[in-house]
Image 1 (tube, rainbow, N blue to C red):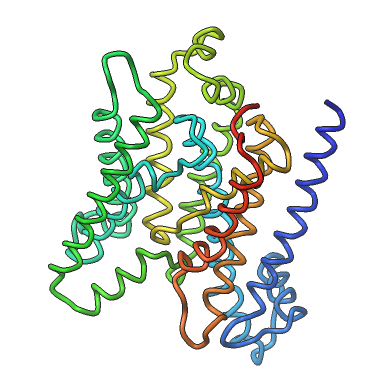
Image 2 (cartoon, rainbow, N blue to C red; image 1 turned 90 degrees about the vertical axis):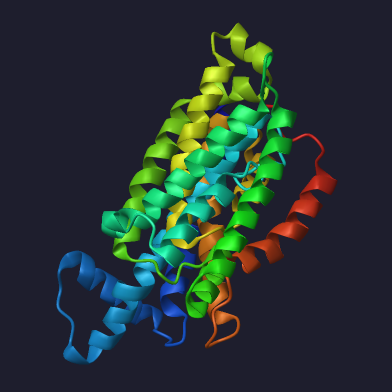
Length: 346
């Protein structure tokens, strides 16, 4: 037990150092390169309230007002998607599950697209997009849960199949909304956003995603033992006093909140919630008490690196971040599946 704790501590320390390194890299590289020393100087001035020379103001604005909120949002999105992936895989006892497989992200995309293209919920102002994305995710969750439920309870396989089918249905609705959009430019922009983009990240998005992801991560850690039991079957859950059906419903609701907020900020970024739990289990085992400590850090590193590549691979153009995560995620997932058959047992 002590060796496992030391192993997890070492991984967390190494992961945090790597995360800090890729974070600084994200501040430095771009269409306007900024020396690392200057970027750190601007960060220190922002934190300490120090002064900078007038000639440094353009670089300061690039680092602090543009790149820093984007890098921080990427970290939070990566951590949030990783936590959601762990939770969803425990819910359905299927290592192939993630928010996209269950249709939650597709439902959130429908709500967000309605706001971007048609101004739905415009009366809510800046909260229209996250509210619509959350409502879309919640509707998708309720529909999937209702259709997958049987008189004998909620069967994981039926849940995955239902979510997959409805996910395609919600994606079709999004396509129709884009096709009916009155402005061609808006349709093109929303299609790019649906593939994932952090270009619109602001300090407001940092706070919004930060609060939601932090609360979700803490709650997931507090229920790690319950997730261990749930991933082993409803009978095991019942034997330790857990109402599996009610617990799944609560987890679904929490997942809808997190996914809705993330999709409203950066669109649909795939493979993070699918791959990161697998990688983490290979490193620390399947015990959720360890997985939920390490997985958010690995997910944060992955998304920061993917976002940095998305805006530097083909300058001055920016690739959808979902294309980068898929390019890495598909071969990684195939390799992981070939090397390890059983990944869910604690």
